[in-house]
Image 1: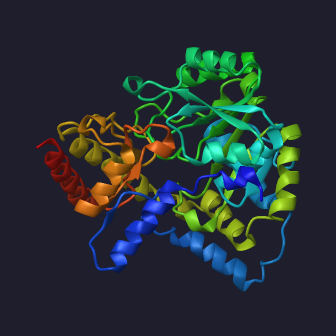
Image 2: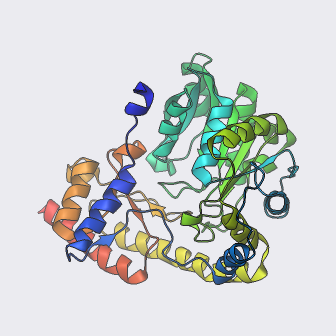
Length: 393
């Protein structure tokens, strides 16, 4: 038995979502804020493209790194939307979801015992991916009062504490679970510090379309040639186009590291699902698909404001206004419960599913996903308020 794999913890997000579905199957009216999945359907032009591909027999293997046409479309997207120039033949990789892109990255980057610096709170899969690749996560605590953003000083301190074993920095923005977004100046300061320290930067930009600040989203690799040379940019179609089940992620990186990533993928997965690649091509290049996405993005912005308004009005809850993604990560420590007990009781007593903060690196917080209807948010937050009022009484 592989002891590394045996020690990996299952996803708490999926476990909570499964429990909520089990209760719903018993006839209980559960309001779930657990899963990070848009409640919108995949836009019709994207589905039509996949159906055409199947009808035309486009169901065979493609190149392991993805169809050349899709690689070219991703390279155009990076150039036009993110200001990054990647060669579609040598610096782009299409994978079976963002998770595989990240796993390819860590497998290509890490020697056994290398450390990866992960700002905390963090998406719960990062440390397990690092361990699978033979590395060790080193968590870098961030300050709730600053919006849980990593500072250059904290990055330098963590690098020094690693004793030279740190190989890479993971930076996820907009953030799952906190919803934090970095400004251009904040990113540049972190990028320049990472380059000076000799770190690779794994920029997880999966939620780039969900930004609710006045300033536009900025990609790390766009900030300078020096930063680009040390950055792997990871993205995908899951969140922006409501394509979670289609499993299409993509990455851009300098050719030497991308060659290793593509080699890993060729042995692990052969290639991403062929019809799904045609769907992704439509997502990136069909104007009708882009038009269909806009109402979804506006809805997320409205929901972010609503969730913040409702939670911030509950005595005992401390919360930062979400700036991106579709999550909030309120501090509930004032109620005297650990995050797991808080979520278990909330589900049991009010039939509201949220995810404990413990597997995200902060046991004083819980995560709500607002990838759900306005009606669910209104009723769910009313139940949360009722639950918190009981805890205070």
